Image (cartoon, rainbow, N blue to C red; front, side, top):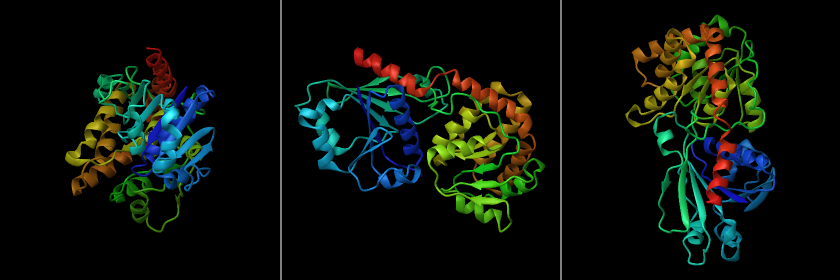
Length: 364
């Protein structure tokens, strides 16, 4: 079987991070399958995987064929005409659309076999993830089938990618450092909370590359205790996360990893119009609620909601107070986060769930 994954690099590498993890997982499940990863920004891909060369139309990395989305003539030649049967299963990830050269192939009269397009959507804890999972939709041609496949946090979704190194839950390192990976805002309240927390004494702040790095470094000031990180490959990033004692995390790729670590964390969701990020945050909190006592859950929810609310004088006070509380209680709260991580593994691995689904629809 040949599976082609489509990826547009958006918002600081989260999309390519998920797709690269998924490609490797699918290849590991059945090395005989051919996995193609078509990426629109190889320079960004290179920052999380140094083996990727930015100037090649085609290259093999970890047994996966990596194509430059923008190499129209080359890619058309690889997949068109007698080669159009290579397009058997297409994973269209995160509403990325399809390259023009692929559209030409899919809707050309020469195409005489069925192509399955599986829409891999963004990770969400909202109820719609269950409703949309495996829901079919139409295309303008009968031979091109389209169906949704939803990552998520329940057994009625595709679950999360549980790849090598994530199968088992590692013990938490209570003396580990603190990872800070967020979007930009005034981080002074959080800096004050960290510096005032006894549970953070002697721990280093690992400030990750990305949109929030500059604003956090500015808020931290010239004091020691912070390490400004460069971009890291996925394996090193995973290992670093798992060795921390507390996480401030953003995005989707790192959110999914944080959920699986069992380490206490605060999620900074991507800011959206009308404060819709709070809908996403509250949906995930509801999935986590049953793993905590009501009192403990309230402490976690207060910090999550404060960090994702618009900045104001009152918000800054709430943010400092709620983060201070969560940091002080982190060892106690770890049990709830750990229970949540164990529960997520019961939903199975997204890669395996997806592969099973692909085999089912291809047989049908």
